[in-house]
Length: 246
Length: 208
Image 1 (cartoon, one colour):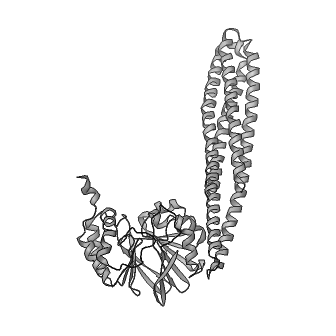
Image 2 (image 1 turned 30 degrees about the vertical axis):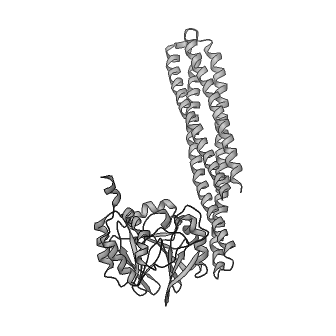
Image 3 (image 1 turned 30 degrees about the horizontal axis):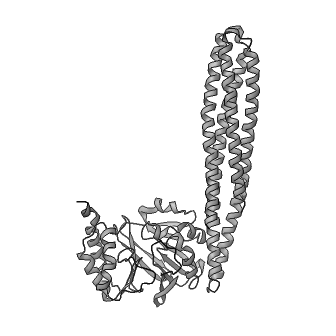
């Protein structure tokens, strides 16, 4: 699994993904880690199948005991079905996840890790000296959903928003926004159910100073491409499966 | 990894099969208990002629109650064993994945920090294996106890035939109860034999 540093000034943001040994048939995912001093937060740590390569990749950057916090943007298996394994590797860790998913996430096996429910309005967490914000992104696509914003690094980990379903060979960054649109259009139209929720999120996110918008699938948006994405997403009609039924 | 999963599924299927085999025993034991209660009424109606049969009907009912309690105890132990087997399987799975991390990343700067997690999971595996062995012994003892209960039932069925032969006009009705008990005993013994075979499979598949 490849590891790429997105930010390294006092604390680090590392993106893990593009695993060439990923089993066939499972969707490619991006995992992120904020490393600050003796603590680390793993964001959307992935499914069972990526657990071993993910942990292996982390151990080049941090010790097991440094991983004190996990974050799950929502409850999907590609996000957090590895929870039962993390539970045995990190029995003293905390899992920050939407409050509504606690009873569901425990089905993955959570006997040791502490569940830290995120309220609907969002909250903050400190990883050592770094303050991070959990930004509400409900119904994008899950009914309880959060993104993680780091005001110092100016990075928004945007979960499934901005996702594109691509191969493990695809570049890490969007390098031509117009050419990238076909790769993400169907995903957003089908997976995102609500125009109202989408516009509410865009309004909130436009107030943030973002240098990198880092989704859980596909490529990272950098600089002006973040604004281009927000503009494109704003005019996109989502929830199309309902329309298809008419 | 594939063979491990297959092996685990077999273990869980074997445990579920014990519960399934013995659930049918519950219905049969309930039937015997009902027949014993009917027999009590019949022997009471037969007056002096049924006197010899009255204590027998008490025994039959007691045996049926014991069989039902035995099935309940076996099911509880099988459920407990399934939970331990799930915990063991999780530890085994975690250990294998941790081991894969260790083997494939020997050059990782912090690979040494895996050792505490590995020791902890190994300890869990050991504890689960010991708990499984204990539970398997308990389950075996419960099945043996049920087997002994069925031996007593067969003896009572034989005795009741001798007793019923003196009951004249109620002979046929009481003989029917004795036959029911005999058939139920044969049925339950078959189910116990199948359960022993499933238990043997669990035992064999528990050793890693």
